[in-house]
Length: 338
Ligand code: PEP
Ligand code: MN
Image (cartoon, rainbow, N blue to C red; front, side, top):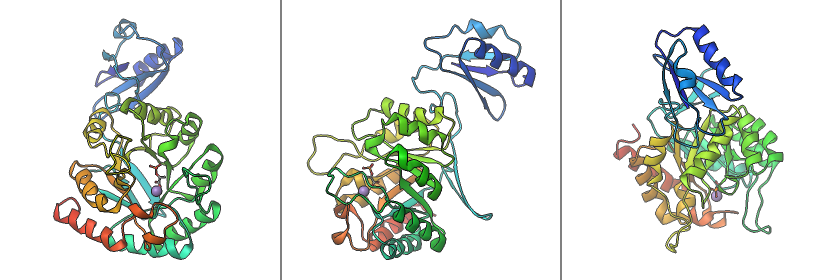
């Protein structure tokens, strides 16, 4: 339920509505807009009778919100959300302003020289955010699990040396604290999309969250996972489509392009696409990245490795640095990057 206030409604009228919402045991979430304020009603168990608020001074309209997710929905927040990253006093980056942000780097941080070499190459090509896992969720317990804290230290070094922002995954509740300390953006991976304890903890973090869609998740489940994060107070959430499981054998997953306009319509949160994990194979990454960019997504996250044939994870889907450069040039030719 969304209570829309009159343009001229004052703070007393707003406070009275909030008080009435709380009196019923629900939560009030004022959403200031350009012209008027709306108040979202959260934590109600069933439908609410609009008449409870329509008679109050300053209330213009009461709109039932039909979706199970509220904070995430565009009904509650019509303007696009911007994610703002800062380094020092005069270096900042905004995601969601209509331009395309490029996040690139290896699947996993393997060594300082590997990370720095790739970071310099992707920066040169036009990336502004460096990706790289320090804690890796692997399908096999025998596969490389990441360098852990050492990997985070390397990522900090990459930021210091290149000025790139960092996105890296928090694989569980215990490592989230340390990941939050080092990174600029906390990644929640596909396998953890319904790890509700982790989502709640990410919602208490002071850093933006890049939430990947579960490889089996419906859009409602995905948006409800984002709702978990936002319900704890973190509004800085990005939705990342990374491919879902289908019957195909010609790719590791299927990039759900349909999800992009759907998310745009349903939610105000920035949209990120990961063509690398969708494809699982290098030859499909550039076409998928171009397709996603053409739909107007806010960011792409792409795996790039200086020696993919020796990579400790996801080598077959990692672009060579020169391929990443070619992709960026192609996006410029499409007038997507100016
Ligand atoms: C990754 O980004 O390397 C990763 C493991 O992604 P996902 O959770 O989408 O599989
Ligand atoms: Mn990977």
